[in-house]
Every structure is written in C-alpha cells, then in structure tokens.
Length: 193
Image (cartoon, rainbow, N blue to C red; front, side, top):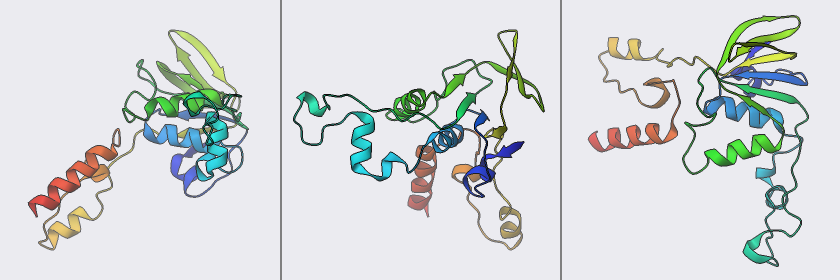
C-alpha cells in the first residue's frame, strides 16, 4: 500500500514492518526517523538520549563520553530510504546536523540507496533499478516523501480581495524545504513591512 508522509505523520496510518521511503530530503529523513523509533523518541528524555549517543553526563570519563560507548536502538522495521539523485543522501540537510540524522538512521539499520529508478509497485513490493541492476524491495508499504507542491490556496482569494500577498517558505518553494531559507525570507519581509 502506498502512503504519503502526511498519512504517516499526521493521520498516523498503520505502517508495516518493511517500508520503502521515496525521497531522501528533509521530510524523507524525518519519516525514516519516526518509523525507525522503537518506543518513545530518545530526544524526549535526557537519560535515554545520553545512553543512545554514549554521553557521560557525570563527566567521569574523558571528553564526557561513556566508557561503554553508545547504545544503538535497532529499528523495529526494515526501512529503505531512496532517492533518484546519485549524490549523498541527506546532502541538503542542515550543515551542522545532517551528519547526525545520517548516523542515527545508519545505526538503526536503515538502508540508504541513491541513484534509484522506480519501475513499479505490485503485490511483491517495490521494483527498482540501481546502476542498471533490477532489484525488488519486498515491502509492505511505500511512503512518498517526494514531489511536494507549494500550498497557495489562499493567494488567489486574497489578491482578488485587493490584499497584498507575500509568499515565503514552503508556499514560495516547496521543493527541498529549507527552514533557514524560510526564516530568512520571513525576517526580511518583516523588516520591509
């Protein structure tokens, strides 16, 4: 069954044990992070976060690192994160945090594949081709995190009513959603208003 990221994150639709995520931008990484969690996210509990990342909050060890190292929590699902581009997955994520998202998913066993051509979806799963080699991903669900369009449903009626309209963030450009760009656009707009 094919689901959108909105089905998964907002509507909380049931997702199977084997999942292919199409689109490895920010939304794809967020969906992979969400689906790869087993239990409560460690980011919501300081102790769990420190344990997962191997942090010693008592500073008993050099550099504040726990002597036992990080404790990885494997994903309860088999997850494939896919993109058409041949570049590094998550290359467009935040410069200071992108590596954390990639490492977190890698530690949970998420398989990240670049240069993917999508062939078909059938009862066997998702059929793809990578570097000319066909491959079948036997998945229960395919989650689409690609092809976002800007939401501009209010623009026309507002302009028709004679109001000034400014488009920023995802309403301006939905591809490769970028919080830094959206914040900059909002700040510059506020300064100019």
